[in-house]
Image 1 (cartoon, rainbow, N blue to C red):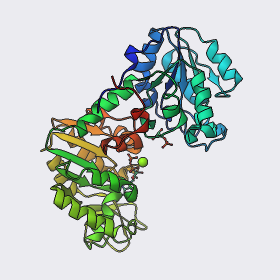
Image 2: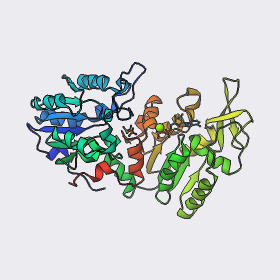
Image 3: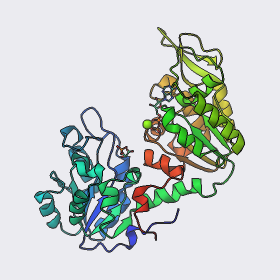
Image 4: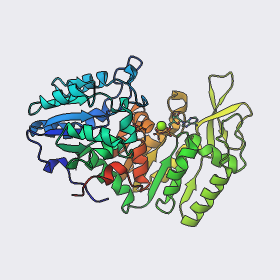
Length: 393
Ligand code: ADP
Ligand code: 3PG
Ligand code: MG
Protein backbone atom coordinates (compact mmCIF):
# COMPACT_ATOMS: atom_id res chain seq x y z
CA UNK A 1 0.00 0.00 0.00
CA UNK A 2 1.23 3.54 -0.82
CA UNK A 3 2.50 5.48 2.18
CA UNK A 4 0.29 8.20 3.60
CA UNK A 5 1.26 11.83 4.22
CA UNK A 6 2.36 11.72 7.86
CA UNK A 7 2.17 13.94 10.90
CA UNK A 8 5.90 14.70 10.70
CA UNK A 9 5.13 17.13 7.85
CA UNK A 10 1.97 18.64 9.36
CA UNK A 11 1.91 22.33 10.32
CA UNK A 12 0.93 22.03 13.98
CA UNK A 13 2.63 24.74 16.06
CA UNK A 14 0.01 26.79 17.83
CA UNK A 15 -2.74 24.94 15.97
CA UNK A 16 -5.61 22.92 17.39
CA UNK A 17 -4.93 19.38 16.18
CA UNK A 18 -7.67 16.74 16.34
CA UNK A 19 -6.10 13.30 16.81
CA UNK A 20 -8.23 10.16 16.43
CA UNK A 21 -6.69 7.51 18.67
CA UNK A 22 -7.96 4.02 19.48
CA UNK A 23 -8.00 4.09 23.28
CA UNK A 24 -10.62 1.31 23.27
CA UNK A 25 -8.63 -0.58 25.91
CA UNK A 26 -9.59 -3.57 28.06
CA UNK A 27 -10.83 -2.65 31.56
CA UNK A 28 -10.86 -4.68 34.77
CA UNK A 29 -13.91 -5.29 37.00
CA UNK A 30 -13.43 -1.83 38.60
CA UNK A 31 -13.25 -0.08 35.24
CA UNK A 32 -9.50 0.54 35.51
CA UNK A 33 -7.33 0.17 32.40
CA UNK A 34 -6.21 -3.48 32.30
CA UNK A 35 -3.83 -3.16 29.34
CA UNK A 36 -2.49 0.21 28.18
CA UNK A 37 -0.69 -1.00 25.07
CA UNK A 38 -2.91 0.97 22.68
CA UNK A 39 -2.15 4.16 24.66
CA UNK A 40 1.59 3.48 24.79
CA UNK A 41 1.74 2.74 21.04
CA UNK A 42 0.17 6.14 20.27
CA UNK A 43 2.80 8.02 22.29
CA UNK A 44 5.27 8.64 19.43
CA UNK A 45 2.62 10.74 17.67
CA UNK A 46 1.44 12.45 20.85
CA UNK A 47 4.97 13.22 22.07
CA UNK A 48 5.79 14.64 18.65
CA UNK A 49 2.75 16.92 18.79
CA UNK A 50 3.63 18.10 22.28
CA UNK A 51 7.24 18.80 21.32
CA UNK A 52 6.04 20.63 18.20
CA UNK A 53 3.82 23.00 20.20
CA UNK A 54 0.47 21.63 19.00
CA UNK A 55 -2.75 22.05 20.97
CA UNK A 56 -3.96 18.48 20.88
CA UNK A 57 -7.57 17.34 21.14
CA UNK A 58 -7.95 13.56 21.43
CA UNK A 59 -10.90 11.68 19.96
CA UNK A 60 -11.67 8.05 20.75
CA UNK A 61 -14.45 5.59 21.46
CA UNK A 62 -14.55 3.05 24.29
CA UNK A 63 -16.65 -0.09 23.95
CA UNK A 64 -20.08 -0.05 22.34
CA UNK A 65 -22.37 2.18 24.43
CA UNK A 66 -24.83 2.42 21.50
CA UNK A 67 -25.14 6.17 20.83
CA UNK A 68 -26.06 7.45 24.29
CA UNK A 69 -24.11 8.36 27.46
CA UNK A 70 -23.44 5.42 29.76
CA UNK A 71 -21.15 5.87 32.80
CA UNK A 72 -19.77 2.34 32.37
CA UNK A 73 -18.12 3.49 29.15
CA UNK A 74 -16.80 6.84 30.38
CA UNK A 75 -13.25 7.72 29.35
CA UNK A 76 -12.50 8.98 32.89
CA UNK A 77 -10.23 5.99 33.81
CA UNK A 78 -8.60 6.10 30.37
CA UNK A 79 -7.77 9.81 30.53
CA UNK A 80 -6.41 9.20 34.03
CA UNK A 81 -3.98 6.57 32.74
CA UNK A 82 -3.09 8.67 29.70
CA UNK A 83 -2.25 11.68 31.94
CA UNK A 84 0.05 9.46 34.00
CA UNK A 85 1.88 8.21 30.89
CA UNK A 86 2.12 11.71 29.43
CA UNK A 87 3.19 13.22 32.76
CA UNK A 88 0.79 16.17 32.57
CA UNK A 89 -2.88 16.73 33.37
CA UNK A 90 -5.40 16.15 30.57
CA UNK A 91 -8.94 17.45 31.09
CA UNK A 92 -11.97 15.57 29.75
CA UNK A 93 -14.69 17.47 27.85
CA UNK A 94 -17.86 15.64 28.80
CA UNK A 95 -20.15 17.30 26.28
CA UNK A 96 -18.09 16.22 23.20
CA UNK A 97 -19.36 18.83 20.73
CA UNK A 98 -21.10 21.17 23.17
CA UNK A 99 -20.28 24.69 24.25
CA UNK A 100 -17.91 23.56 27.01
CA UNK A 101 -15.83 21.39 24.66
CA UNK A 102 -15.53 24.35 22.29
CA UNK A 103 -14.49 26.64 25.12
CA UNK A 104 -11.96 24.13 26.53
CA UNK A 105 -10.42 23.56 23.10
CA UNK A 106 -10.16 27.32 22.47
CA UNK A 107 -8.33 27.80 25.79
CA UNK A 108 -5.62 25.19 25.06
CA UNK A 109 -2.04 26.46 25.02
CA UNK A 110 0.84 25.09 22.96
CA UNK A 111 1.83 21.60 24.15
CA UNK A 112 -1.41 21.04 26.08
CA UNK A 113 -3.96 18.24 25.62
CA UNK A 114 -7.71 17.83 25.91
CA UNK A 115 -9.74 14.64 25.51
CA UNK A 116 -13.35 14.51 24.42
CA UNK A 117 -15.67 12.03 26.17
CA UNK A 118 -16.51 8.74 24.40
CA UNK A 119 -17.55 9.62 20.83
CA UNK A 120 -20.05 6.74 20.81
CA UNK A 121 -22.09 8.55 23.48
CA UNK A 122 -23.41 10.48 20.48
CA UNK A 123 -25.46 8.66 17.78
CA UNK A 124 -23.78 10.79 15.08
CA UNK A 125 -20.43 9.04 15.49
CA UNK A 126 -21.29 5.58 14.15
CA UNK A 127 -23.88 6.99 11.72
CA UNK A 128 -21.20 9.33 10.31
CA UNK A 129 -23.77 12.10 10.63
CA UNK A 130 -22.63 15.17 8.63
CA UNK A 131 -23.74 17.62 11.33
CA UNK A 132 -21.83 15.75 14.04
CA UNK A 133 -18.73 15.45 11.84
CA UNK A 134 -18.83 19.20 11.06
CA UNK A 135 -19.11 20.10 14.72
CA UNK A 136 -16.17 17.82 15.58
CA UNK A 137 -14.11 19.28 12.74
CA UNK A 138 -14.95 22.76 13.99
CA UNK A 139 -12.98 22.06 17.19
CA UNK A 140 -9.67 21.78 15.29
CA UNK A 141 -7.67 23.02 12.33
CA UNK A 142 -5.72 19.86 11.42
CA UNK A 143 -6.65 16.16 11.68
CA UNK A 144 -4.31 13.26 12.50
CA UNK A 145 -5.45 9.63 12.15
CA UNK A 146 -3.59 7.40 14.61
CA UNK A 147 -6.40 4.96 15.51
CA UNK A 148 -5.25 2.03 13.40
CA UNK A 149 -7.62 -0.31 15.28
CA UNK A 150 -10.61 1.72 14.05
CA UNK A 151 -9.71 2.50 10.41
CA UNK A 152 -12.07 -0.25 9.20
CA UNK A 153 -15.03 1.80 10.50
CA UNK A 154 -16.60 4.54 8.35
CA UNK A 155 -17.58 6.75 11.28
CA UNK A 156 -17.71 10.53 11.77
CA UNK A 157 -14.30 10.63 13.48
CA UNK A 158 -12.62 8.30 10.98
CA UNK A 159 -13.96 9.59 7.63
CA UNK A 160 -16.28 12.56 8.30
CA UNK A 161 -13.65 14.72 10.01
CA UNK A 162 -10.71 13.96 7.66
CA UNK A 163 -12.94 14.96 4.71
CA UNK A 164 -13.34 18.37 6.32
CA UNK A 165 -9.78 19.16 7.51
CA UNK A 166 -6.20 18.86 6.22
CA UNK A 167 -5.38 15.30 7.29
CA UNK A 168 -2.27 13.29 8.11
CA UNK A 169 -1.45 9.76 9.25
CA UNK A 170 0.00 9.38 12.74
CA UNK A 171 3.18 7.41 13.32
CA UNK A 172 1.31 4.34 14.63
CA UNK A 173 -0.92 4.18 11.55
CA UNK A 174 2.12 4.68 9.36
CA UNK A 175 3.98 1.83 11.10
CA UNK A 176 1.01 -0.56 11.02
CA UNK A 177 0.53 0.06 7.29
CA UNK A 178 4.23 -0.42 6.57
CA UNK A 179 4.51 -3.65 8.59
CA UNK A 180 1.24 -5.29 7.55
CA UNK A 181 1.91 -4.40 3.90
CA UNK A 182 4.88 -6.75 4.02
CA UNK A 183 2.35 -9.62 4.25
CA UNK A 184 0.55 -8.48 1.12
CA UNK A 185 3.29 -7.11 -1.14
CA UNK A 186 5.30 -10.18 -2.10
CA UNK A 187 5.99 -11.78 1.28
CA UNK A 188 9.19 -13.76 1.42
CA UNK A 189 8.35 -17.44 0.86
CA UNK A 190 7.58 -19.90 2.23
CA UNK A 191 4.72 -17.86 3.74
CA UNK A 192 2.78 -19.78 6.41
CA UNK A 193 -0.38 -18.65 8.15
CA UNK A 194 -1.49 -19.98 11.54
CA UNK A 195 -5.16 -19.48 12.32
CA UNK A 196 -7.19 -20.44 15.36
CA UNK A 197 -9.85 -18.94 17.57
CA UNK A 198 -13.54 -19.41 17.70
CA UNK A 199 -16.22 -17.95 15.40
CA UNK A 200 -15.61 -19.88 12.19
CA UNK A 201 -18.28 -18.23 10.05
CA UNK A 202 -16.64 -14.83 10.79
CA UNK A 203 -13.20 -16.12 9.86
CA UNK A 204 -14.00 -17.92 6.61
CA UNK A 205 -13.39 -14.81 4.46
CA UNK A 206 -10.05 -14.33 6.21
CA UNK A 207 -9.13 -17.99 5.64
CA UNK A 208 -10.12 -17.80 1.99
CA UNK A 209 -8.07 -14.65 1.44
CA UNK A 210 -4.86 -16.63 2.00
CA UNK A 211 -5.55 -19.16 -0.76
CA UNK A 212 -3.01 -18.66 -3.50
CA UNK A 213 -1.19 -16.06 -1.37
CA UNK A 214 0.19 -18.31 1.39
CA UNK A 215 2.04 -21.59 0.89
CA UNK A 216 0.28 -23.26 3.81
CA UNK A 217 -2.48 -22.45 6.30
CA UNK A 218 -2.26 -24.25 9.66
CA UNK A 219 -5.65 -24.39 11.34
CA UNK A 220 -6.23 -24.98 15.06
CA UNK A 221 -8.63 -23.89 17.80
CA UNK A 222 -12.37 -24.25 17.42
CA UNK A 223 -11.81 -23.07 13.84
CA UNK A 224 -10.59 -26.57 12.98
CA UNK A 225 -13.69 -28.43 14.22
CA UNK A 226 -16.00 -27.91 11.21
CA UNK A 227 -13.16 -29.12 8.96
CA UNK A 228 -12.51 -32.20 11.07
CA UNK A 229 -16.25 -32.93 11.29
CA UNK A 230 -16.68 -32.54 7.51
CA UNK A 231 -13.98 -35.17 7.04
CA UNK A 232 -16.10 -37.61 9.03
CA UNK A 233 -14.32 -37.42 12.40
CA UNK A 234 -16.54 -37.80 15.44
CA UNK A 235 -15.65 -35.13 17.95
CA UNK A 236 -17.64 -36.48 20.92
CA UNK A 237 -19.38 -33.73 22.89
CA UNK A 238 -17.38 -30.93 21.23
CA UNK A 239 -19.55 -28.04 20.02
CA UNK A 240 -19.09 -27.75 16.28
CA UNK A 241 -20.46 -24.66 14.52
CA UNK A 242 -23.30 -25.99 12.38
CA UNK A 243 -24.27 -25.32 8.77
CA UNK A 244 -20.73 -24.94 7.45
CA UNK A 245 -20.36 -28.29 5.63
CA UNK A 246 -20.76 -26.77 2.18
CA UNK A 247 -18.51 -23.78 2.90
CA UNK A 248 -15.81 -26.08 4.28
CA UNK A 249 -15.95 -28.36 1.22
CA UNK A 250 -15.75 -25.39 -1.12
CA UNK A 251 -12.84 -23.96 0.83
CA UNK A 252 -10.87 -27.21 0.70
CA UNK A 253 -11.32 -27.64 -3.03
CA UNK A 254 -10.44 -23.97 -3.62
CA UNK A 255 -7.27 -24.52 -1.58
CA UNK A 256 -6.33 -27.46 -3.75
CA UNK A 257 -6.90 -25.41 -6.90
CA UNK A 258 -4.83 -22.54 -5.51
CA UNK A 259 -1.95 -24.74 -4.43
CA UNK A 260 -2.19 -23.71 -0.78
CA UNK A 261 -1.71 -26.58 1.61
CA UNK A 262 -4.16 -26.82 4.54
CA UNK A 263 -2.89 -28.45 7.72
CA UNK A 264 -5.45 -29.65 10.24
CA UNK A 265 -4.96 -31.18 13.72
CA UNK A 266 -4.35 -34.91 13.98
CA UNK A 267 -4.77 -35.09 17.76
CA UNK A 268 -6.61 -33.04 20.37
CA UNK A 269 -6.53 -32.32 24.08
CA UNK A 270 -9.86 -33.41 25.45
CA UNK A 271 -11.75 -32.57 28.64
CA UNK A 272 -14.16 -35.21 30.03
CA UNK A 273 -17.26 -34.34 32.01
CA UNK A 274 -16.76 -34.67 35.76
CA UNK A 275 -12.97 -34.79 35.51
CA UNK A 276 -10.49 -31.96 36.12
CA UNK A 277 -7.73 -33.79 34.28
CA UNK A 278 -7.27 -33.78 30.52
CA UNK A 279 -6.36 -36.47 27.99
CA UNK A 280 -5.10 -36.64 24.45
CA UNK A 281 -7.14 -38.29 21.70
CA UNK A 282 -6.71 -38.84 17.96
CA UNK A 283 -9.19 -36.80 15.90
CA UNK A 284 -11.25 -39.92 15.17
CA UNK A 285 -11.17 -41.15 18.79
CA UNK A 286 -12.67 -38.38 20.90
CA UNK A 287 -14.77 -40.11 23.60
CA UNK A 288 -18.54 -39.51 23.50
CA UNK A 289 -18.41 -37.27 26.61
CA UNK A 290 -15.15 -35.56 25.54
CA UNK A 291 -14.85 -31.88 24.60
CA UNK A 292 -11.86 -30.92 22.45
CA UNK A 293 -10.12 -27.86 23.87
CA UNK A 294 -6.61 -27.70 22.34
CA UNK A 295 -4.41 -29.26 19.69
CA UNK A 296 -2.51 -32.35 20.86
CA UNK A 297 1.26 -32.97 21.08
CA UNK A 298 1.61 -34.62 17.66
CA UNK A 299 -0.11 -31.66 16.01
CA UNK A 300 2.06 -29.17 17.92
CA UNK A 301 5.22 -30.91 16.71
CA UNK A 302 3.98 -31.01 13.11
CA UNK A 303 2.87 -27.34 13.14
CA UNK A 304 6.14 -26.16 14.75
CA UNK A 305 8.16 -28.25 12.30
CA UNK A 306 6.35 -26.70 9.35
CA UNK A 307 6.86 -23.17 10.70
CA UNK A 308 10.58 -23.88 11.05
CA UNK A 309 10.70 -24.00 7.24
CA UNK A 310 8.99 -20.61 6.80
CA UNK A 311 10.35 -17.15 6.01
CA UNK A 312 7.13 -15.26 6.70
CA UNK A 313 4.46 -16.13 9.30
CA UNK A 314 1.12 -14.53 10.10
CA UNK A 315 -0.68 -15.66 13.25
CA UNK A 316 -4.23 -14.94 14.40
CA UNK A 317 -6.28 -16.85 16.96
CA UNK A 318 -5.25 -19.25 19.74
CA UNK A 319 -4.95 -22.94 18.86
CA UNK A 320 -6.94 -23.89 21.96
CA UNK A 321 -8.98 -22.31 24.73
CA UNK A 322 -5.83 -20.59 25.94
CA UNK A 323 -7.46 -18.59 28.76
CA UNK A 324 -7.44 -21.89 30.70
CA UNK A 325 -3.84 -22.95 31.39
CA UNK A 326 -4.80 -26.61 30.82
CA UNK A 327 -5.57 -25.75 27.20
CA UNK A 328 -2.89 -23.12 26.49
CA UNK A 329 -0.01 -25.49 25.81
CA UNK A 330 -0.70 -25.95 22.08
CA UNK A 331 -0.60 -22.22 21.39
CA UNK A 332 2.33 -21.67 23.77
CA UNK A 333 4.52 -24.44 22.36
CA UNK A 334 3.94 -23.63 18.68
CA UNK A 335 4.52 -19.89 19.19
CA UNK A 336 7.46 -20.35 21.56
CA UNK A 337 9.23 -22.57 19.02
CA UNK A 338 8.56 -19.95 16.35
CA UNK A 339 10.88 -17.71 18.38
CA UNK A 340 13.94 -19.61 17.22
CA UNK A 341 12.95 -19.40 13.54
CA UNK A 342 14.58 -16.62 11.51
CA UNK A 343 12.08 -14.67 9.43
CA UNK A 344 9.35 -12.07 9.58
CA UNK A 345 6.55 -12.97 12.03
CA UNK A 346 3.39 -10.92 12.56
CA UNK A 347 0.54 -11.38 15.05
CA UNK A 348 -2.87 -9.69 14.93
CA UNK A 349 -6.27 -9.96 16.60
CA UNK A 350 -7.88 -8.50 19.69
CA UNK A 351 -7.60 -11.64 21.78
CA UNK A 352 -4.43 -12.92 20.15
CA UNK A 353 -2.23 -9.97 21.20
CA UNK A 354 -3.36 -10.39 24.82
CA UNK A 355 -2.90 -14.18 24.74
CA UNK A 356 0.63 -13.83 23.30
CA UNK A 357 1.44 -11.53 26.20
CA UNK A 358 -0.08 -13.88 28.81
CA UNK A 359 1.84 -16.85 27.37
CA UNK A 360 5.13 -14.92 27.27
CA UNK A 361 5.66 -15.44 23.52
CA UNK A 362 5.60 -11.84 22.23
CA UNK A 363 9.33 -12.18 21.55
CA UNK A 364 8.54 -14.65 18.74
CA UNK A 365 7.10 -11.78 16.66
CA UNK A 366 8.74 -8.91 14.83
CA UNK A 367 5.42 -7.07 14.84
CA UNK A 368 2.20 -7.32 16.87
CA UNK A 369 -0.60 -5.18 15.50
CA UNK A 370 -2.75 -2.98 17.77
CA UNK A 371 -5.65 -3.80 15.46
CA UNK A 372 -8.26 -6.50 15.84
CA UNK A 373 -10.81 -6.40 13.03
CA UNK A 374 -8.86 -3.63 11.26
CA UNK A 375 -5.68 -5.72 10.98
CA UNK A 376 -7.61 -8.79 9.82
CA UNK A 377 -9.32 -6.74 7.10
CA UNK A 378 -6.02 -5.14 6.09
CA UNK A 379 -4.22 -8.46 5.59
CA UNK A 380 -7.16 -9.62 3.43
CA UNK A 381 -6.30 -6.75 1.11
CA UNK A 382 -9.60 -4.95 1.75
CA UNK A 383 -9.87 -1.19 1.43
CA UNK A 384 -10.20 0.46 4.85
CA UNK A 385 -12.28 3.66 4.81
CA UNK A 386 -10.20 5.43 7.47
CA UNK A 387 -7.04 4.93 5.38
CA UNK A 388 -8.59 5.53 1.96
CA UNK A 389 -9.66 9.02 3.07
CA UNK A 390 -6.08 10.09 3.95
CA UNK A 391 -3.91 11.75 1.28
CA UNK A 392 -0.90 9.77 0.01
CA UNK A 393 2.60 10.99 0.82
P1 ADP B 1 -8.87 -12.78 17.86
O1 ADP B 1 -9.73 -11.87 18.72
O2 ADP B 1 -7.42 -12.61 18.16
O3 ADP B 1 -9.18 -12.65 16.40
P2 ADP B 1 -10.63 -15.02 18.32
O4 ADP B 1 -11.62 -14.12 18.97
O5 ADP B 1 -10.96 -15.58 17.01
O6 ADP B 1 -9.18 -14.29 18.27
O7 ADP B 1 -10.28 -16.26 19.25
C1 ADP B 1 -10.17 -16.18 20.64
C2 ADP B 1 -11.10 -17.13 21.32
O8 ADP B 1 -11.10 -18.43 20.74
C3 ADP B 1 -10.63 -17.32 22.74
O9 ADP B 1 -11.62 -16.78 23.60
C4 ADP B 1 -10.49 -18.85 22.88
O10 ADP B 1 -10.92 -19.32 24.12
C5 ADP B 1 -11.35 -19.37 21.76
N1 ADP B 1 -10.94 -20.74 21.38
C6 ADP B 1 -9.85 -21.12 20.72
N2 ADP B 1 -9.80 -22.47 20.60
C7 ADP B 1 -10.91 -22.96 21.20
C8 ADP B 1 -11.43 -24.27 21.40
N3 ADP B 1 -10.79 -25.35 20.97
N4 ADP B 1 -12.61 -24.37 22.04
C9 ADP B 1 -13.23 -23.27 22.48
N5 ADP B 1 -12.79 -22.01 22.33
C10 ADP B 1 -11.64 -21.84 21.69
C1 3PG C 1 -11.36 -2.68 18.21
O1 3PG C 1 -11.16 -2.85 19.41
O2 3PG C 1 -11.32 -3.59 17.37
C2 3PG C 1 -11.60 -1.27 17.74
O3 3PG C 1 -11.46 -0.35 18.80
C3 3PG C 1 -12.94 -1.12 17.05
O4 3PG C 1 -13.99 -1.36 17.93
P1 3PG C 1 -15.43 -1.82 17.35
O5 3PG C 1 -15.27 -3.23 16.86
O6 3PG C 1 -16.40 -1.71 18.49
O7 3PG C 1 -15.78 -0.89 16.21
MG1 MG D 1 -11.70 -12.06 19.46
